[in-house]
Length: 146
Image 1: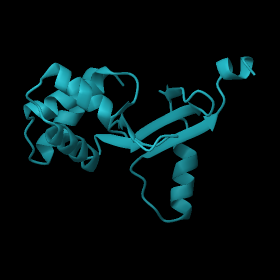
Image 2: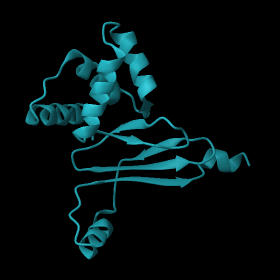
Image 3: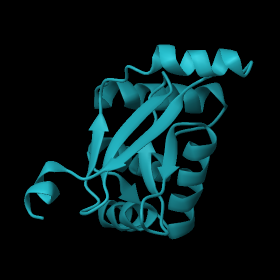
Image 4: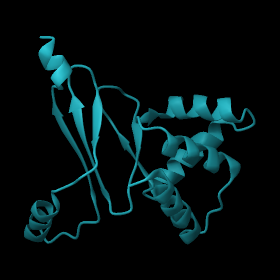
């Protein structure tokens, strides 16, 4: 899904829940949407301060907490203690391939797990609203250098 559509969806979620788009929220959202890689809160803070030095640390972390609570973003944990944040599409699907050697993360744009997951949900009498899937292995570059 393209960045502009995700941005508009995030704005709609904020409006639907009665939140305004403050300057801090706008900056954090802009940074999340404009970076292909998954950023840590420290990365987001540094980029926000670089963009607007008047935005404080607490405002950045409150924005991240709000976006997480509203389902706009999701924290993911790899080998580090710090979460990396991913923008969560409105259809509730996000999937990655993660290399165990170099920590490379590849976003999977296509998700073909719908029927399988719907079957699991039905079996357990569960109503799914989305999923975040991480598949671990070794990328081609790391395989070639072994």
